[in-house]
Structure formats: structure tokens, C-alpha cells
Length: 79
Image (cartoon, rainbow, N blue to C red; front, top):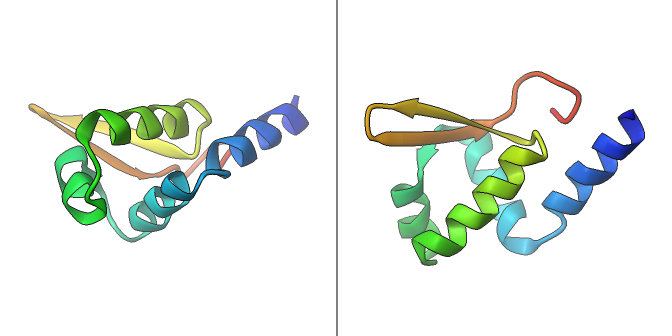
């Protein structure tokens, strides 16, 4: 089971945009809007990458009102 989670995390991170997202979220919590400005990519494209990273357990999503903040996962096996 641990091996499958590790492989899923590595596969999720094995794309250049997702690696950049992880590197940015290490430093602070960021919204999709902030990430689109930083990376110069569309919101739907980044949302898909963020969803995959959250599903793999590498990122955490925190909802505050109408904004969703993304940060590097602090706990769990993927972190």
C-alpha cells in the first residue's frame, strides 16, 4: 500500500508544471488566481494540475470563503 502511494505521488509530480506548483506551494499558501499570474497559464489548466496533486496527497486545499488556498501537504504518507 505504501509503495502504491509513493508511486502515485511520484507520477503526479512527474510533470514540469506540477513540479513548479509544488515548488511554489512550499514557500506559501497560494490561490489559483495567484498561481495563474505567476505561471502565466490558464485557470482550467492549473486547476486540473492542482486537483491531481491534491488527490495524490502532495498538496492540501484549504477553503476560506470564496477562495481556495493550496499548500504543500504537511502530514500523511504522501507528504
